Image (cartoon, rainbow, N blue to C red; front, side, top):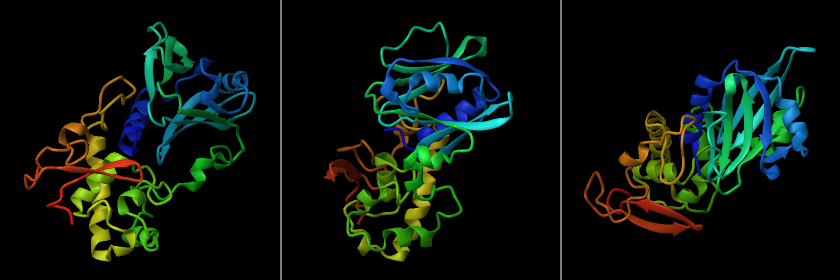
Length: 283
């Protein structure tokens, strides 16, 4: 699943390519991809003639601010969640359709934003002007602080973890604890902070939480600089793979030597998810 760095990479690409571009229409090839409104015709008609002002990211959600100059100025929103296999690709309209294409959004100059999603879990929303985005895209209301926000302090993270009697790795995947973090970067942050993934949250001391917070931010910044991670199918809006996987500390490196001490990287399962770690560097 694309995590914060991959979604941020897509956001930055969209802001480079689609700002001030006017939507001319669209085509929904898989109706259930559109979560709101329930009518796909209404969705297509609602976004037509709108201009993209800005793309924002909240956790793993993408939000496009759409403006309309007539008959009266207004702002509405286009929301996107890539889920497990979603891709947003900026292409010419005459590019051959990928068989997993779900939604096409057409622009002037024969360009289009194409939503490709093999597993079909991705979703799109249109939120009309004057309506709170969180009331339609309800997952936004449950999000914790973003790791890059001022609210993401050591005290904030300590308070979130204090009473949770579950492994720290499992807690970090909870979007109500840290917004945008997923399996890859939770493993990486735990390695950099020297914490084993199965350590209970209640057993963590403040002197461990402070380096954990720092490590979360550092690994996310490093991955964004590398354009995210591609282990299966992530692509940026230009169809280019992310490069973080080549420098990952532990994720997806089972049986390979630790880049710090040479001990072989191990993998365990926690709550059905793989966790990668170095038994020597983490304790």
